[in-house]
Amino acid sequence: MAGHSKWANIQHRKGRQDKIRAKLFSKMSKEITVAAKMGDPDPDKNPRLRLAVKEAKSNSVPKDVIDRAIKKSQAGEGDEYEEIRYEGYGPNGVAVIVEAMTDNRNRTASNVRSTFTKNGGNLGETGSVGFMFERKGTVSYPADVGDADTVMMAAIEAGAEDVESGEGGHTIWCADTDLNEVSNVLETELGESESTKLVWRPTTTTEMDLEAMQKLMKLMDALEDDDDVQQVTTNFEASDEVMAQLDED
Image: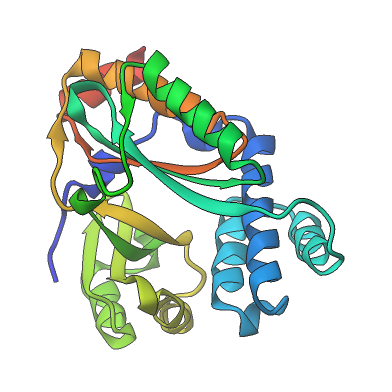
């Protein structure tokens, strides 16, 4: 297991976590509904639904919103959503993965392609950038849950692959197929996590200067504002100085 890595830098999103909470709730509700419709409506019997509910709770989604999303799946309400992944390039050739849920593939593909084009990027074929990422499970805890050694031992016991600890907290990595089991064991040892989800972890990164980062943020913001888009991941790498300047804009 390794120590600190570049993940926090790569994942840095300039205040997006606090922007447009209604849109965030909507995206998480959609994931809960789809997960419940695909499997059992009981989170304890449906790993994907359990993870979706845990992630929603960590983002302060109200219980009634979660319950309503599950009931919606069982009532046969709403549209049938299809999961699609788009891959492309942003400024400086940075790799971008866009995960979407849509009831109209043509509409979503057109919107995503247009967003890439208008913001200095281009949509590629499936697999065009996917080889630069690996699918992983990640569980995050605040720094005050324990010291690095305590979290490391809990992670080893849970069957995790890697741990990164720093002032901002602890990030525990595992195989994507092990996320539900690992998170359950960690919960008994460390309590509720701040975040538990599947992500695309870059295996190679693209260095970005301030101008390129400003363009990339515009692209990511535009993609995330699309109601069909659930998550956007890139493999950018930027210095602390660039990120500090970006936060001042």
